[in-house]
Amino acid sequence: MLKSLRHMGHLIRVGFVLTRHDALMDLLSLFGPQPKALTRLRNLRRMGRKNPETSTSHHNLVEAFQSLGPSFIKIGQAMATRPDIVGPDMAQELIRLQDKVPAFEGEEAVRIIEQELGAPLSELFTDFDSTPVAAASIAQVHFATTKDGRAVAIKVLRPGIEKAFARDLESFLWLARIAERFSAKARRLKPTSVVETISESIALELDLRYEAAAASELKDNCAGNADYAVPDVDWDLTSRRVLCTSLVDGIPFAQKDKMIDAGYDLKILAEGLVHSFLTQALNDGFFHADLHQGNLFACADNKITAIDFGIMGRIDQKTRRCLAEILYGFITQDYDLIAKAHFDIGYVPSDQSLEKFKQAIRAIGAPIAGKPVSEISVGKLLSQLFETTDTFNMPTQPQLILLQKTMVTVEGVALNLYPEINMWEASRPIIEKWMRDNLGPQAKIRDFAETALDTMARLPRLLDHMETLTAAAQKAQQDLGQNRRRSSLKLFLYGLAGGISGSLLLYFLAQ
Image (tube, rainbow, N blue to C red; front, side):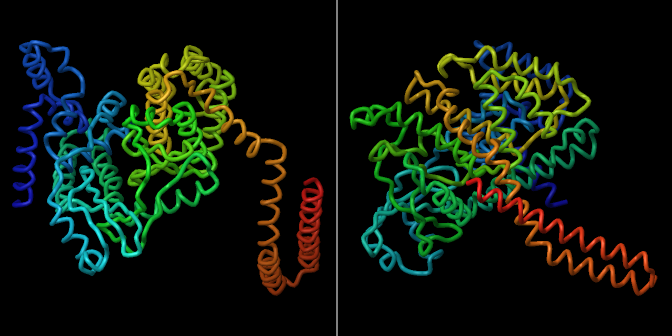
């Protein structure tokens, strides 16, 4: 009872702020359709305003979350990555949430660092700037110099942020359960799943060791990329609430004028960003999913350095293959390839019409073919994709949602750097290379060889297992026919091993 009263009190305070910004109905819509009386009341309030048309979009929710503070800013950003849950319109608006909040005291940052790393600041650094260089909803960053003279950036988790998130999300979960209990329409929308999904997304960001691991993995993957770099992680100075990385020597993408004055080639940087993102997504299946201008730096030799690895995306090999075929289909205007890729992987139910789906894809791709990014409405394109999803009863693919959002961000950053860039032409060399390496004849031979090697490795255990089964059957039946079957099975397995060995030999001779 007391817990319910606490949740009600907290939600009333939140509801007051949302109502003041005329955003309460937007948020409640996630928990199911609202009573018509409330909708009419809201419309009457809007009609009384000077500019009622400005109040009809979800930008009111953005303003409300901004005023509610750090935890709601991050909740809103997490919601923006799931347009399948909150809807494409709301997700598009929530992307505008600015992750900038007032900094907390430098003395508090020092206390957290000393507590987390188990030593006085003087034993950890020769110099530490107590004034943060940046402050966001979850953490803020300080510059420092290590004992061995390295310039580093220290990310410190905001004090009390874990409790704030736990309180807000627990209240939302309580409300979602109430909605599901009393509303069949709300149960269909599964609001508890919405809240739980957002909670899981944020939980990873509240442990900076996960971010350090993501940075380390991405750095390993990008070791051979001349256009893209990731700072080093200092694991000795990293913990759950503190992350230490090497300091980036470059100019933020947000400072375009300074980049021009310093002589950077904006065309190379824009194309390098597109190439690097697609390489991460297609080759590694692991990509930086928060590539806004504040997280990207132009460095020497037109190399891009990325920071802030709290939001990362993963896609498996099967999804990567489908993605490559879809992108290649848009580049070459091969709508049959795109449609078949969707059907082959199961994104479109088999009871749907391939020809009609191909026609729907053409309606999306044909208007943007050959145009520069400056002439393409990304929001309109995404809207069409989601409409197509609904029309053909396509189930949601969560692994692609974050990828789609990141592609939109990459397009926007690339366009800002170099307005004449054509996203599709910039993507072509990376996608074509991936297609050759993974879908061509050599790739099929390699896949067969890898499968054969795996089978060869398993064969001794398979033979032992079959020997045991056959011996047991022989003892039970003492049958001549059983013995013959045993011999035939062994001959078959040994023949299989010989055939695989011969295939491997042919493969290596063909190299």
